[in-house]
Image (tube, rainbow, N blue to C red):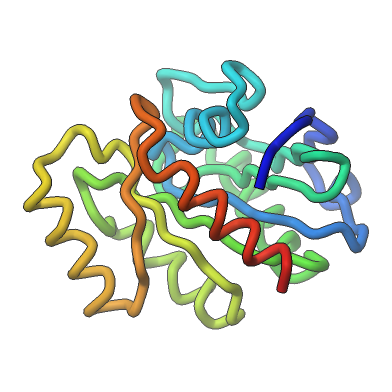
Length: 191
């Protein structure tokens, strides 16, 4: 897969703003501060398309990026930690529920897990919801440059044993495994 063009198509803060067309969608989900925006920028070979912040919980909308005029990358709000008011957290949670109940043509969910921490309580809370809906999933261990290779291998083995999830390690500091991730996305789009 070659990404020639990418642009922010829409930012949705409420149900009425969600894109509900038949175009294929690849969704990215992970807890706050997992590096989701940096990951999307790296995959798209763009510096600042997805907004990054040093403060966790900044993505409080669902952001649609139109790729090659053919499909969307959907950046979902981070979960588990956010310094936002309770009312806003409830709004974001409701928006996510509506998205997953009504999304059309969702080809793949890319679940981002911080390789230093593995599955945390918020990850374990959302994982059954994703698995229950039978969405095709790809697990990516972000920030993999920050732990040793033995620990990284152990994380991958545990994810496979406990949850049946194959994980790909990734760091924004290199292009290692970037093509493998793009190949997985392309395969999902072709199904």
